Image (cartoon, helix red, strand yellow):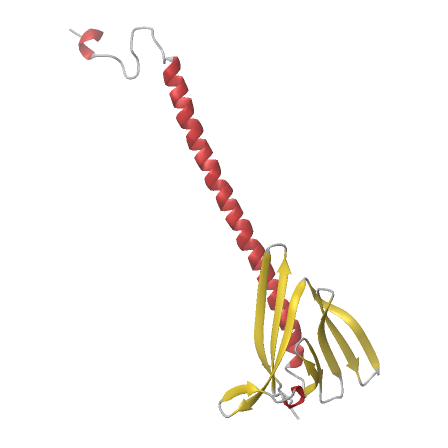
Length: 181
């Protein structure tokens, strides 16, 4: 007795010539559609997260570059010639001066070269800068304390904020003058 009746129905088939019913096809299509929609939603969320991380990292990198462009040259300064909360002019042992300030959303630098007598005004260091601030500090024992005036400063606290679209990053660093006179 090897007839089909004794073995039962063949997997998924309900009769001798019958295929899938319309309801089964529709249910399977709906399940597949829901799975695809969930996968697309997951991919869209991942893509948006990646864009956010990339945008924030890019702005953070630009803030770091802007701060470094101010900090690195000022390490060799002999002191502060003139200082405000948002503008600083430092002098060097060779009588050169460098000024950093914010103008029209740009971090700018003016330089005077005493050896040649040339002045370069308004060099754009970085764009999209929304805040630039300087703090003037002096060593008081083992800690840094705010200097009574900018000209007495032994160190300079530099803070640069860069903003682009919905992203913003601030980089802050304390610069000790290596050639303080």
